[in-house]
Length: 393
Image (tube, rainbow, N blue to C red):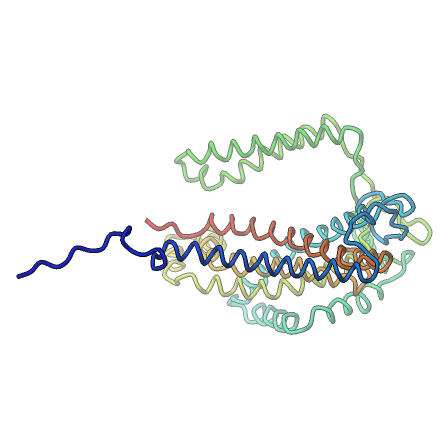
């Protein structure tokens, strides 16, 4: 019986049939196509701007902004500060909304999601009504409601609602106590940063301890280490001066006042996004096998302990991916701030290209700014997702 012919070696296969060569050629062709399309669009932009007597340049950003901003996170003088600085102020204002909004929406969504599964009929129905109303109503309509019907209808400053603790609520916004940095603030900030490194070292060190009480709560112990260092430095350096709001004429003095525009935008984003997060949390909890919950209860764990130690850690593997999308949606939905007059990134950019006529450059700046914010959120959430994913053996 004749033996079968020997298999062809990789070197005997023609290059146009070699899978490895074809993969490389396809990728090179795709990159070349992208570059060709980009070159065509760029030339089209350059010709169009030359036709109207303009040039693609960002030199206009050095000119004085010459427009006021209703709310600034840093000192701002429109007569001397540039368009670039005004744009930076808008980015900071957007970050104020996005960071605080993500934290509050997460807390609200977590509470509402757990309430949706409550055995108490009234609590479960209240959570369901909240989710169904705010998830199925356009965000823009909600912003108008919170701003025009909610906040602007509050009492005037002189008749403001006083909340214990030096907090005032009026149609000028929410005035709360705050701290004014002193000259020792920088030194305290450096010590607090060093405390973060020390807390990270404690976290890693306690991770090697086999005692369950210490190992499971190593994050809490690390936080207490940082808190002790920060508080000791604050007592020694006194980097802050307490400032309590007071009614002075037609406005507040002292403390910090959250403007009606900021409050309406933040409230709308938190309530709207929290409704979606509530459904994500509910789905994640229901994805946990019931046997795990029954086993935890059989071991004597309470309802809260079962949620904290068993259900939530397992549910996070289901929750985190769609939760990332909601965080991204919140950051991009913050551009609706222009509807209530809050000076965010889009609001400031819109004023800049209305004054300068440099529409293309400003739109590119807006796209890059939102892209960077979204990439930061995605990177952080991808790292968190990798932390909780199942490890295959």
